[in-house]
Length: 437
Image (cartoon, rainbow, N blue to C red; front, side, top):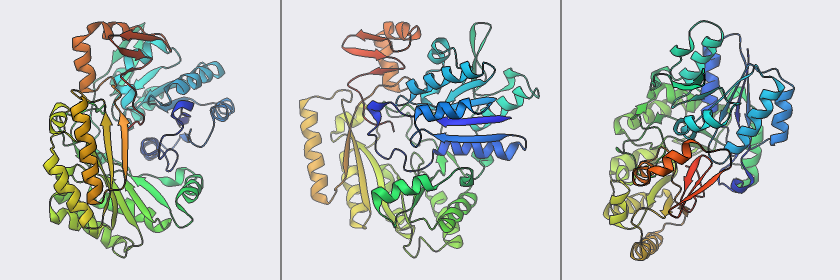
């Protein structure tokens, strides 16, 4: 069986997204590694649209008789994915085509209603769903037994039971499945000849419950990989490729101090690149998780260069509105704690949050200036994008039910204005957010 896993080329309007194409697509690698571990008779191609044009992807599809094609989609590449799906169906109507991601999980009804070239949509975690879908195509199980799957059946859209993937079954990422030189070359162009970095993931989910109002991830709690197995994976590729930086892409790396402590011990037992300072670490963290000195000491032991912190706002009222479970006092203490220990911060803010006004904006500016005075030197500002599946989207639909009614029947590229908001294709847009995070 021949399988293509593809992150489609992003639309031109999103071509300036930061970090695009720096490292391989981790979700596709996780799925591919899982499938290769389960089947001996499948061939898998992985295509990253950051490094190949849409036309080149079409040539790849035309020259291979793929049995299954899976696209990882978000609002930056969804339109391209539809074009590729239509092309693939014309080349071979028997090819089964699907898509997945948080975007697809929240929009499976609209996708299957409007895009006839898509046969299925994966909801939430993709490893087990894709494995079971292959077993269905092989005749081993019925389609109703494929968990996390949305599909059409006699004109009706059906959704099978949703199951959260147990990370104890997580297969170590097999970076040998792709050519890493394309990514390392991009890194050299941006960061210099001595820089070499790969991404990994140790956890899934977020401790912030309920989720922040703008968060579109599938809310299924926190899960952790075995710290020993994760340390094996990180150490293996750090040593093999002499990485100078490791980037953990988990939603928040410090959700369990005991897990973090165990991982650090296991990692340092396998490689001295972090303890010796040859390799740095960076990841995401909530501010309240950075208040303890013992946590900071562990980060220093891992030779942390930077942590990403989503401050989002500099006003306590706005922070309460968005369910951030943080306040300015926590932010100031965490910022001081991190910077005083020689670790940089990549700070993220959002404008257009619920309840924002001129006074709150002035507070944001004052707060950012105070952080700069403390030594913060890296700030990014995003505009709010209200995505289906987010708590704020559900609130808007409750107030304006006509939005939900109209978006159900949207045709591709249609636009509907409702009370100053715009429903455009697969998402509701209020101002437009520049980065998909």
